[in-house]
Length: 141
Ligand SMILES: [Fe+2]
Ligand SMILES: [Fe+2]
Image (cartoon, rainbow, N blue to C red; front, side, top):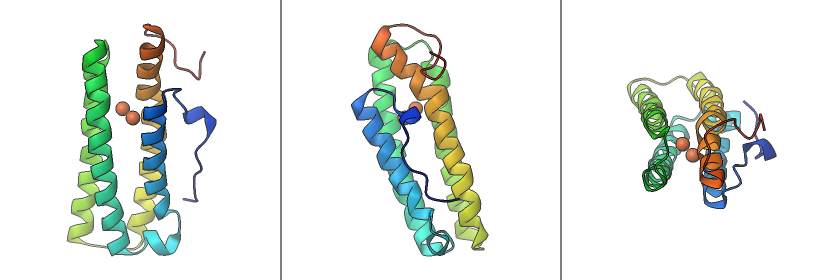
C-alpha cells in the first residue's frame, strides 16, 4: 500500500488524540516503501514501535473513558485488545517465518484497521467528550 497521508476526515477535534493518531500513522507509513516493508528487520522494528505506541495511546484513551463515564467504554476497550492482539499475531508470524509479501499484507490490514478504529470508536468517544452525547459519528453529522 502506498503512503497514506493524514486527512481531515480522521480528525477528532481533540488535539491530544489527533496528535497520537498522526504519530501512529507516521509509523505505519514507514512501511509504505516496498523495500522497507519487505525487509524483515525493518518490519519487526516498526511492529515493536507500533505496539509500544498503541499500548500507551490506548491506556490514555481508556483512562479518559473511565474518568468521563463513557457508556461505550467496554466495547472500545475490547477493540483495543483486539488491535494489540492483531499486532502480536504479526510479530509471532514474522518471528517464525518470513516472506517479503508479509510486510505488504500487514500494511494494508493495519491501515484499514487504523482508519476503521478511528471512525467507529475514537470519533464517537470524541463526540461524547465534546458534547456529552452518544450518537452519530462526525462523518454522519
Ligand atoms: Fe485512538
Ligand atoms: Fe481507541
